[in-house]
Length: 237
Image (cartoon, rainbow, N blue to C red):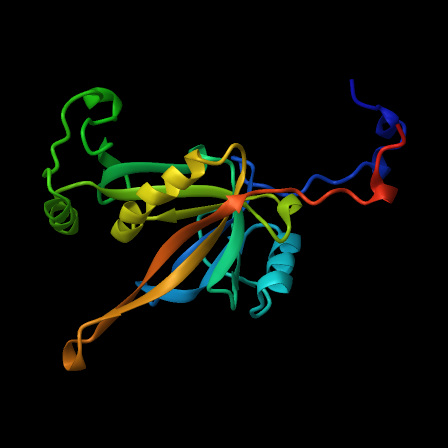
């Protein structure tokens, strides 16, 4: 049973930190919108509903002071950082969740699958309706006829693990390829792992045909080893 000392002095009780309903303190984002049109970034944008979190993010990764942005979510503050990559802590392979989703006009899922079987309740267990080949899957998704990647990564920041959990969501097809090796690396580590979460600029073609895009990458570094607590912070027993 916890201590009840604050029942006699409720004004001294610590104030709970504002968190999302799912216990997240913020989101890392690789893009934003300009006049309603999506645009990609080369440095991370972090959104949160907690001013203390936004200020700590700016302290660690640079950028302008947090500003409000229009959103229906609770993460009403955004920080455009100066960091193209950050060190994160992943709680094993389960920290990365993947599914394929065909979204409707109202951002509702019309169909979900794992690439082999569908997973929505009404069609759960039925064969996936998407093409079999990787290229054809991408083409079908681009045409709005097939499922596209829906990847969610949950993590803490290695520079401040106690700040709380963050989330990054992506529909990147290149990340789908890379995550095969990432998950294998995580499975080889007993416990939490440290990794780089980065935004990598890729260029291809020449002359007028030269193009570039930014892709998210996750590179596993190794096992996470928490820093030992200073002697003066050790419990007296």
